[in-house]
Image 1 (cartoon, helix red, strand yellow):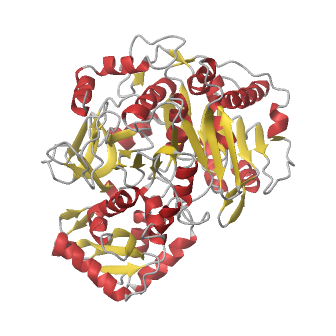
Image 2: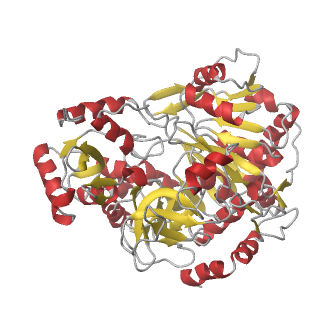
Length: 632
């Protein structure tokens, strides 16, 4: 059955479609109803079912004779250590930690914050929470104390799981002082902070609420998995909000599992027992969905990688992992590929490794420009699939469903809507725009299983942030267009669309042209204020390693490419050459922040920024280009 038939099957009977796929999981009580719409627009999936995520991800594989299969591969080039954990061993570790949680007074509906580096115990903590109905909220390890405090205040956890430190290529990040400061700042005080000591930098447990991880589980009695209502929140994941306050995305248990289980075969085309690697972090939604839950649900081996695409130790780091563990499918961000390409444009490092097990590379997190995709296709010799999803959705809105039908390559596109998503491209009044026209991308309600039904303790904010602009739709906040074949092209965040004298230009389209220049490794286009045209585009460009040619000439050539391929209206106000671009820790370029610097507008340094010092460098580069401009 091809993609079109599967999509129509869903469209003709949405509830029947998802109820049928729900049968792939183990239920204590099988749901009779898929969708509950009584409280619309607050929809619920599988509310009348009873199920447990930990049982489906761990215990059932042990029960069916697969306990000796490797569940987790831990690979840490920054500590020069590796570990394999079988499903049986994972079950024991998870159950013991869950027992410690019950002994310390946690129960169904309580919250636990997980503030940890990329080590297996982070997954153990997530699964232990799921085992007994505690709602986990993972906060990216190394987040500043103030940001951690904000999340503690909102989630109000009884316990925080953390580690003594994280390891970055630049050195050790000591978590305990950050955690101590966050607890001191927070109005809500957790009862306990459970600390996993790491030999690279142990810490002193000097407060009454501090407990050593090993002591916490020493006398614990492992509990069975507790059946939970289908709409019980599995976790809260905070994402940045436009007001500066994070938004707590809620993920219901059953819909989360049903959707993720469906994706592993139908989108990613992996079979039970194969190795699947999502090169992300458990602090981001990709880590929740595709490092922890989805691979384990479908009895795949998941890779927990504590390293970087370059520098740990070189631009062959990813290729080494793919070779060593015979990875079938890799899921990473376009920014990781760009980093590898900048350091090794000819992919010389690739020659040292055997990637014959790799069948597909999937990209998400930020728009994948065609030039980067073509580079990967050329050197990896496998399909390179860009697909589109958000923290709010938890899984792909659009993609190329390789397990159903590998659609023909269409560079620049995130391909087609997945079952459950009815995509529309709308103008500011909420009317559909013609095919090929840039507009706001919206999804007709209800959203499918696995997506968020609301924000944590913030129903009104959920309405105002996502539902009010286009009644009856979820506003994705992304801008793009759809072609005649229903392929969606994500071109920018709505806020990043540049309005030049009434002409709406997408940053993605401009960047796509610039990065086609052979000396350019990465770029970002922003809109800067102009007294005549309202806005004009400005490009900041990173060059490939080893490029020593005249930088002014490269800037001129980039501008000429844009004018030739898009038109004079898109001509750059300036092209600046920079060493690096400011990004979030998940790899998204901070275009809006750079635009504020260029316009001389005050801003708060984003909590998710990878290195705040980059903003000073960008400010100096923009000043050299004459921005912010003195317009009198």
